[in-house]
Length: 299
Image (cartoon, rainbow, N blue to C red):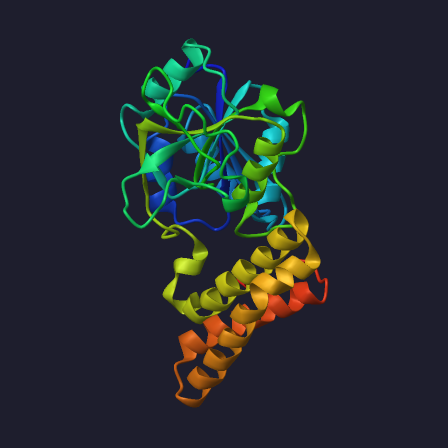
């Protein structure tokens, strides 16, 4: 039925731009089953996409769960061994799935594989400084296409679910940002193998498909993204190191953001004010032990 029958592509959406989502879907059609987790209760969305595309299923989560919880919900419904986590604004090149299939057919031993991004704005992978000597011996495998790494970005993650023994992949305390770093760190600690492939290329449109890209939400989006970036940064350091280490890492960012927030308030740059205000609030909320509660209000 599909090029890769034991693969499901999971796409988490929330009021995503139709044109961009359809570009993503059409770059996947015929290659693998597609499962969309729509983080709302929009029944019209489900009817529209299931009618338009064969072998595509839409599950409504009922509320905006965020990236991690949305993907966990999708993964819990997957019946295939392999899953491809995909942002809705990722476009797959024509040979992407052919090259992906080779890894499966060759019984490649991996936990997560990530692609290379055509956009120079996106680093495809990197290393954790405190783990820089872990799992990076023999950087390039014999086939020359896979390079060992510590983390890959969460826009596209090819995952062997057998390596997780039915465990949830993503920490649902994160709503936005740092989920993939947290996951990759846990994989490394369990001696899993993370690679970036030089044969897998994608185009990432960079959040253009999200509702936050709508100009009428520009200020609120600046606040949202800054709030969650700082909250998630603090939580990541707190979880993986300690609360006091998180304070050490974040206090400078807090005071710099506070100063810039006041500056842009005085000289009236409303977008930058919102951005730095969001940073201050995100750090402050996690400092007080609060959950990642802030959500963008969409009409």
